[in-house]
Image 1 (spheres, helix red, strand yellow):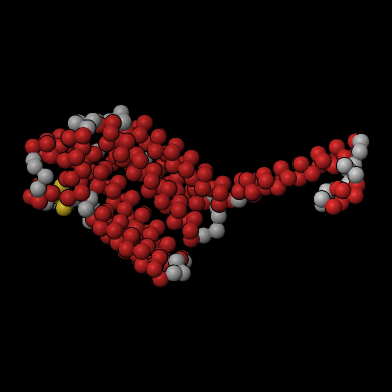
Image 2 (cartoon, helix red, strand yellow):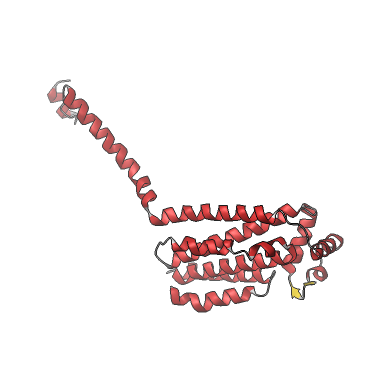
Length: 242
């Protein structure tokens, strides 16, 4: 095509020989680098990296906890509670029965469902406790992430939640471990919702986060009344960190 027609159609002047090939190659690499820049920026973002390390940490912790807890078995009171769940209809009277003097309708309901879905399957309850502890550790990490600048210490504090040896005897004892695990997870989720409530700059979202915090507190109280202590901690002390 003649040069005059190229100018009329908005085309560029052709560059013959090696010069044109070199410029075309440089231009193509510039386009590729522009497309790859967002991924590179995300990979070097400390929050992006810490978030993925936290997920890996939680998976490793939950896997190790399950490995150590799954070698255990039922305790005497586990047999009593599950036998009661199997022989009782789902009623207000059954849900109102206490566990070691503690009102735990959530625990009673969970036993009633487990004995019918997975009869006397200890591996299932060990996995549930391990997953609950892992989710608690990840929730603690999210609380620290939302309150403070990115830091590897967030991973250290989150790992302490699942690394304590106190979880092993508690988790292997289903009658006690189910309530304690639900209490820890509900308290952490309630505190995380309170943090989002305090940080929200929109009235509607603040109300929703506040309602969600109340929901998690209520859910935890169905398993263990000490959930109230964790929620009160979040309501009284977290505003000072926001």
